[in-house]
Image (cartoon, rainbow, N blue to C red):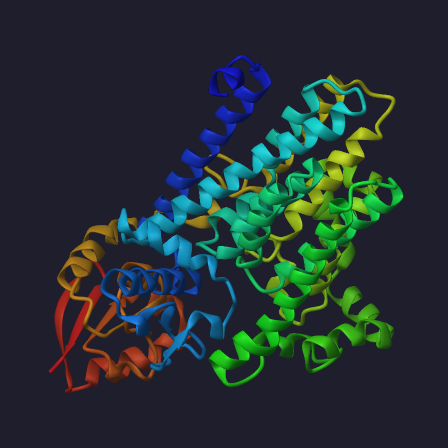
Length: 489
């Protein structure tokens, strides 16, 4: 198999690009972390969850499984399980890699590698879909490279770590398995992708519906072509309801915290779905307020609007698009975070089918145009070294503090200590059972670690820091390069 791949120059090109992407973004995100540009939300939160799960597996302390200190509100000192926030149980699998290295860098590498693997799924889907239309391998190769150059993918990759990022390759491989009618393999990807995050199940439901309609329209004689998509729809719908009506409420003693973002439509998951049909005026007003057209433009323009030529496939993005655009949380309409993750697979699947419909151009011309256009968007929109927005990240703003932070991290490596710290220090210090984000609740900690530069930049910290300086219950033990450590007496 490996020898066969090596004889195919197109596949070799894609593999080299994937490896380059994984290596580069692993380095890039680790650099971002080590120069104190990562934060409690969300690398610190994810690291604490993965670390506690790793320790639970290692020591048998069941209480630490998926445990973290409640990040809402900041400074909270009560312990919760991750399922009180999201049903992203793939964090459990990520925690097993902590046996190799129990640090946040492990999560960053895993995320980069996983996203790189999505290019292989794009290549395989493209090869099957486009070859059936008589296309040469130029287009599958170009689409794979376009995937690796796609700015929203880069933004997802560099914004700390989120288990939902794994949904990108998993949804693509699920689609490919169903396309190949390899239902045993599809079952594996189905289980994994449902564990990425609770709302991913809605996109999975649409994928099942798509293949059910495809089998019906193609008048398939194979019963599995009908019952497996139906099973996909049933399982994904059931998981969505179980997650939002049982798992998350049971973990937090109340409904999902994000439901308030859709309260103009309804107060429950099913109520919100019903509101999509009963409140058209509210929906229209919301879409106009968030510039839905501009959001969709930024999603499709890098792919020269190829997805618009394949509307049936583009409908796969409808559930996640609605989740993002109808939310009252402005961050969800930005590509600078992780909220576009579940949209990326559907956009590329539609682009593949859209490319099949292009008649006036040869495969090579379309492939070359696609890569050139994507390279331009990458230059203007991706915050990578040497590109247009590189300086906006200020990677070396805190770089001189790195050695001081390392010394503090080593001095406080006893994981039984309760630590309170500013947000940029969280990923360095959250590898423990109890970690508190700096707030008025700091007296609950054994040590308080301060980055003075963060205090100067964030008004919320000022009053807390001034109180800490005057607190006779704490004594300053370390002060170097604006990194201060206070110990409770």
